[in-house]
Amino acid sequence: MRKNLYNIIKNEYDKKQRLAYDNLTERRNALYEKVPRLMEIEDEINKLGLKYNKMILLSENSYHQAVDELTRNIDSLKKERENILLSMGYSKDYLEAVYECSQCKDKGYTEGAHGFESCTCFKQQFIALSFEKSNLKLTENENFDNFDETLFPDNINEEKYGIKKSPRDHILGIKEKCLKFIENFSDPNEKNLYFCGPTGVGKTFMASCIASEILKKGGTVLYQTAPILFDTISSSKIKSFKDEVDEDSKYNSIFETDLLIIDDLGTESQTTSRFAEFLNILNIRQLNNLARPCKIIISTNIEANKLYDYYKERVASRIIGGFSFIKFAGEDIRSKTKSQRITNQVGKERYE
Image 1 (cartoon, helix red, strand yellow):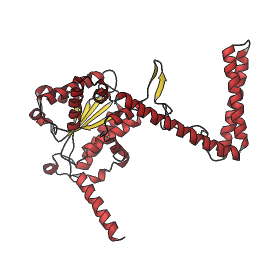
Image 2 (spheres, helix red, strand yellow):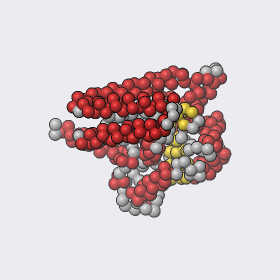
Image 3 (cartoon, rainbow, N blue to C red):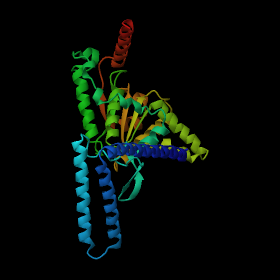
Image 4 (cartoon, rainbow, N blue to C red):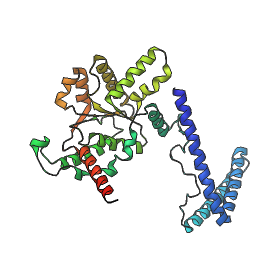
């Protein structure tokens, strides 16, 4: 299965590169027809480039001076092309290929000091394909650009909400803590996050906001509900007993992805084996985090003081020691926004 996934992703990257090339060719042909000088510049740059490479390879006498002259000529031609493009209202890089990932130029790999390695975009796509229900599409809408604190009540009611400030001020404070977590994501001393509170008060939304920012920074993210996560582990172990080693990609991603988001913790089956699996995740990711970013966000209805009621002491104490606890409070925003969408739709249909 692992090999099949790699082949699927490689084919996707091949398509991306062909599309980038086709789009570039289309733009070039259209401009070359309008301004033939642009084609002449391209031809001259290519010819000078060939001469440059030849001289470097042959290392002829006094080639340094000739190479310097070639470099100046190439730079001059590039500047002329840039001026033409800007005068026509285009960006100076309009005649360069546009890739989805500027880091690897849609090849899927980058070249570093230690040779070739998979680009972060490739790793993320591999995770997304391995976990078809990873729900990372949430980040398209649930991100800081769509964060709206006005959805949270502005009144103080400690008896109702369990906090001494308004839910609006409280969520703004949570946002600041999340931004700090993102800023210090690579710091091994930055603790994991434990989101707790009732249903619909923004836990999953805020986790998605963080995921969106980590993806923008080139990190990898895996989002799973607790039941699916532990079912995946159980399934992987069963397959390993059958020597189906190619299936380990899902299992490995749980421990290796930069950010693991576990939603609805506490809704999984409460068994001894699940406790052991959970402790294993916490331990291994904690060790990995010493060398590179390997953080966890837990989203749950379980309050901190109830952890020992759900989990054995070793699991509960590991969470308490390794996580920053953030309590969410307020009204059920999820139900409120859903009701508002229904109301808007009914109103729209009434006037159509």
